[in-house]
Image 1: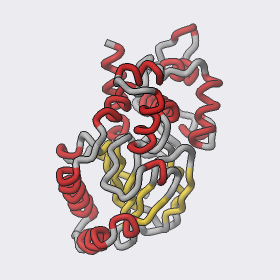
Image 2: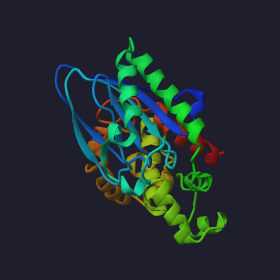
Image 3: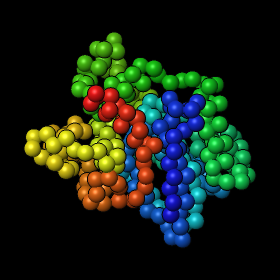
Image 4: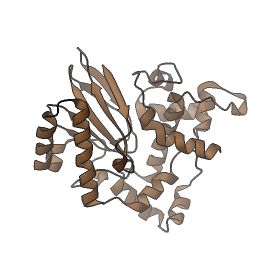
Amino acid sequence: MSYVEQLPVPGLAGVVRTVWIQRTGATDHVHRHLPTGGVEIHFPLGGRPRLLGPLTGPTIEVIPAHTTLVGVRFHPGTAPPLPAVLDELIDQHLSLNDLWGHTADRLVEAMAKSATPELALRYLQAHLLREFRRTARVDSLVQEAVLALMPWRSTSIDGLASELALSPSQLRRRCLQAVGTTPKVLQRTLRFQGFLALAQAGATPSGRRGIDGTASLAIDAGYADQAHLSRECLRLTGVTPTQLLGGELDRCACGHDHTASYQPFLKMHVLFKS
């Protein structure tokens, strides 16, 4: 199996976190999807595309052998045009044909004619770029909230609502509609994504409190201690940090390179360290 992840085309950088091409080998591949705070489009070439709604826990998918799949992962609060608010799509896999109708049918046909997966991914990004330029329905206040809830920032939900001139209930409602989860759930998800970003970047733990390894990296990511990280890891992934990372702090057990996906977290980490 191969998996190649990269940054989106520049025009989508504000709404798309990463894109990828995945090819399975001679056997079926068991894939563990984790909450990221955003939605994803999974497009098997020659098959039917799906939208993976916002996740609050892990979901297991078996990808058939000899499948080539292109994917797009969106930033929280920047989903593609959809006929429903995101809290109605929580923890669901949905057919893009059901959501987009004839638009999805035409997209499937065009991408199936692409000579290579790379061209198919380029076509999909061009389509999304046109749709975002045409609709422009991103909630700018929610985008501000997402940035404020990124790891390494000490932000309370009530304080954030006040900064945005919203009541806590208004902030909650707008996050549910645009992200699919409450601000608190999003904050916990982004904190765990921050931990994974540090781990897979091979970040050197700070060694605060006289500890090192995973425990120190957990504290660097904003957890109270390693036990706190372990509880959240089980909640969000269904496995322990050791099982998820394969016993190594610089990779996940699946062996994928997620450098592009974790770039926003690492940039912010560097900013707050300086």
